[in-house]
Amino acid sequence: MKLINKFLSAAFVMPLLLCSAQAGTLTGDNINITHNILLGSWMYPYWDMGTAVAPSSIYTYQSGVYTAQVSPNSIEFSFSCWGCTWSEFSGFNGPVVTNLTRPAFLDVTIDPSTNYSGFNASRLSFTGDQIFVNLANLSINGYIKLNITASDALGGGPSSVPEPGTIGAAAAGLAGLALALRRRQAQ
Image 1: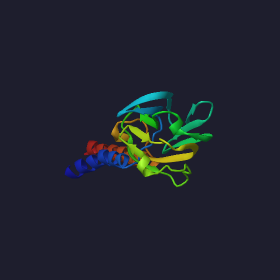
Image 2: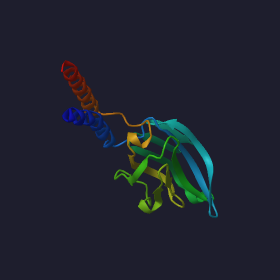
Image 3: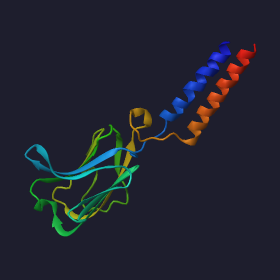
Image 4: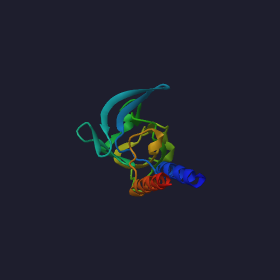
């Protein structure tokens, strides 16, 4: 009987452990992107680019001068205003990405494909639910890709989908449970 109880416990706990070890994505999360300006020590929203569900959420500012796309594990910004600088817009600081669904951002890094002159790690910061990109005084021209490590499904978000191995482990656990119960009833 003790062996059956241990087996049943393992059958229920193993799929949960496998699921919690998965890396999450932003899929299904509501993502908002806003332009912000810095006035003194206060940051204010200047232009709300909108909120959409990830992935493939495309945001556009001023007829394509600035676009952003959110993928399951990255956010891409493209800027195309040759000869313009952010210093022309008094107090402009940069875009803020907010996850309205849950605190999901565990790590944010700059992808090597980024070619935005002057943009580096000192201009990037984040919290669990916001990413801050500081573009003050830089030219408005280039491409930025940020790689995102998101929290897993047990972090409370709808974004992580169990992998086939997890589903298989759960099925094997339930099959083992059925077999154990059948043997117990036969005794």
